[in-house]
Length: 462
Image (cartoon, rainbow, N blue to C red; front, side, top):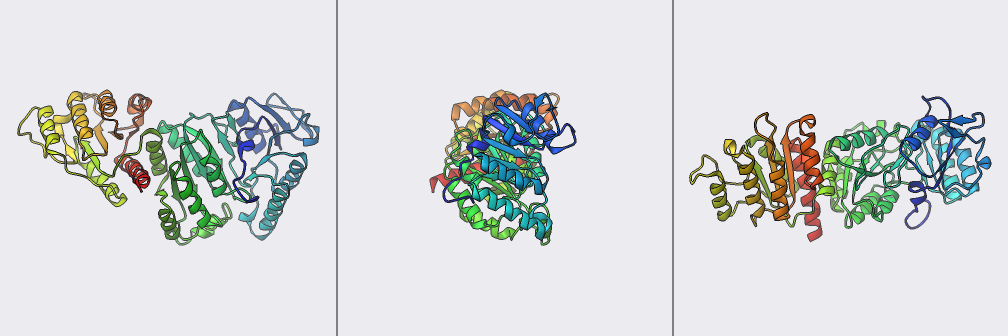
């Protein structure tokens, strides 16, 4: 929004010198927590807290103003009220700061007076061609540069997935869901009110960010839905984009206007325009993380033909409810695959319906048998990717090693669904995902993950 062409957000994500306005010595204030976040996150650059009355906070020398800082800073985080933020932004512009995060709320989400104040903030940013994240934002995280600037001090596993969220709460929910899923995060961007930098600007930046391979987006609404969808579609040719659009009910506009000052807009319109631009959409935080996880771990399939292996039929039925509307096909198994299944099970006339989904019932409990069946299905030329379902049990060990071996031998996408809980599946999760095979604990998430892989695999084929 600050000029033609992509906005350079690198000074915000990879600063060497950071000023933090409004740092206090009170732990329940935003400025204190953002400084703590920077320190706790392991930032290796120089930090200059600014407050007119304090001498030292969290072991850092505090400066009375930006003019007192002994060297130019790359970026600034403003943790002041909405009125003082505009003045501080002006000082940043005059000092040649290259990027700013404004955490304060109290702008257009509060009514006409707030809208007028936000216009002043935008005018100031544009006057100095200064990219501003926010206002009304949780902040940003860059694991690639150990730079954390949210007012929730965190240290999270690093990975290749970057998240853009209009809501701080939903952003945190997605981050913690990713932690549960064993999915590392590269960057998090809390866009807040999108006053100066919006979704499209962030997507443009992440498109060319070498440390990001998958992008997840939570959006309530935007002033330019067409630009958002167009940019998401463009970026998705280079790296997958997954979008969770909220605000589906009739009265959503009223609430989102008082949250980030953005109208939710027509959900069907967003859904349809995103689909027209080839962007994969989801319906929950769990689905957003699941889709990003599969896309981060697995190669794209060559087609839309999905194999399902299980020893209990129900999960396969649930998966099909998700897969078929997403354009996936459940193909018949080749005769030679059926012959191999008979050999593996050890019966020429097994009490198993030999079709896809393949429910091996009690014959499939053994690790070697289950692994052999997975290998046979992955080798089938009619199968482009496999979903393997196995239930947690005290007696039967989860066939994690066998599934990894089958995956490596056939080099086709494999998603594993161990029906269980993370407490008991954590060791297998780490083992599988270290080998590049994503593990899920619910059939719904597994099916959405597979749908995302098929969506972008088919999109690449044209």
